[in-house]
Image (cartoon, rainbow, N blue to C red; front, top):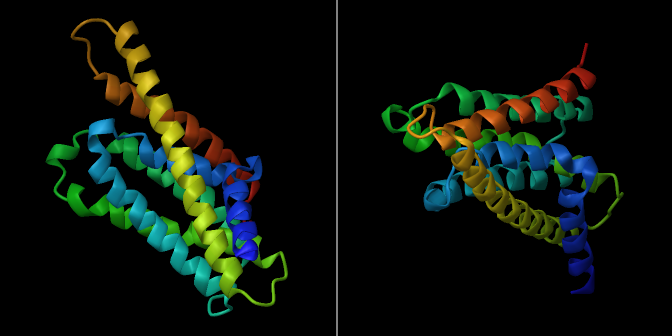
Length: 201
């Protein structure tokens, strides 16, 4: 049990570490379009991301899947930029034919990439027996994500109130749209810089 808790703590610390800021910004990009009342839809998206990264984390750590570290490190910021672009380009989700299923699928696919990134970190510890470390680290990652998303929800709620207070009455776009644009643009700029720094050419 003590070994399991060690890796749970390691997973939490990894998510909260500044060196894992790319994963945090991806979660923020995912959360940017949701309000508190959208928690059911956002839960599907986060669950899909969890399934995706858990799958590649397990496959990569056990040696079933081997991907170049440089490629994964490049693709992670690319997934962030793509999520931000989706946030910006889809302006009316109620009228988007693919709105029900596309975002969880997108999160799941991108989760596969992020899971490979988590695996690179765990494999760097040179662990011989992977079962307990893999379980504990994955639990820690999930707990860290819950903490990040809880903080993000609080920050987004405050930001909505600030935008609403500063926005002219009946002005367009809506406070939610302003928030989505602000967060997506800032996060995309940061991720674009990372992608350029990690480019393969």
